[in-house]
Length: 149
Ligand SMILES: [Zn+2]
Image (tube, rainbow, N blue to C red; front, side, top):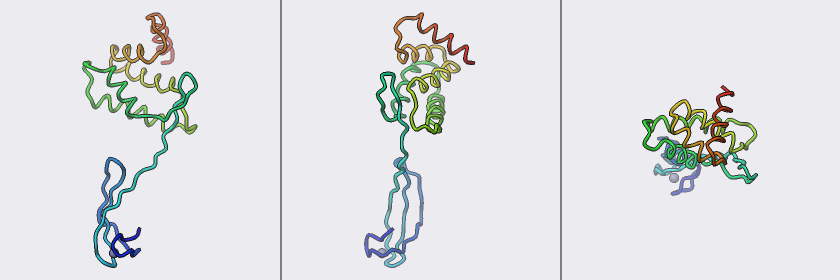
């Protein structure tokens, strides 16, 4: 890390903070004693999500969160619970070694967790997420999930 003032290479970190976009460090140059701030961005590679039609897109936590929030709208579910659910799904997706995951697998994880949390939110999510437009099909999905338990 070079000092932006004197280009000297001898700097020390005097403060480190987690910032939204990564890590913020306050540094001091040992040469000219000026202080400056650097940001380190975490280059976390997102897993790829394989959609039903075979297209791939990067895993998007915000999108997942929005979907779950929508399903939980006006239900007696704490914001923290929604966050926790999404965090749990996200870490499982990221823990997979393959680097890609079927959208179906993610949807199933969410549905299982929502089912434990709130039946209405679960049905809402399922009815949006599943490519099925009739209740019988959703019922079959429910049965399938119950069998997996
Ligand atoms: Zn300097």
